[in-house]
Image (cartoon, rainbow, N blue to C red):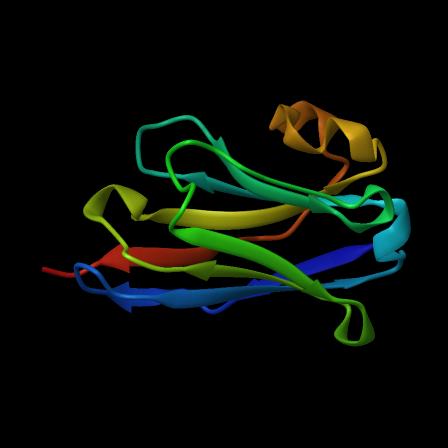
Length: 125
């Protein structure tokens, strides 16, 4: 099982980025995929998740209305479209996978079985 994130970079106020998470070794229908982020000196926090097998998506309050999660099964890729970016969105963004799809939105890092290495999103003034 492997997850590889990409798409991070520098962004200005109100800007947009699309992060990608390419997965291999399992089927989207069997796993929930979550996006997390970790800013310097802060704990890792959940951002959004998708569980295609049970038709579920979720967003935390911090990103609701600004971020959109989606998946492309043909490309084995989960996307996180980020709009109206703010300085507090600066962090390393990780995607992760867990089998317990109905726990998609618990955002407990310990419950996620597999992790990517992350991609950096930095706010530029």
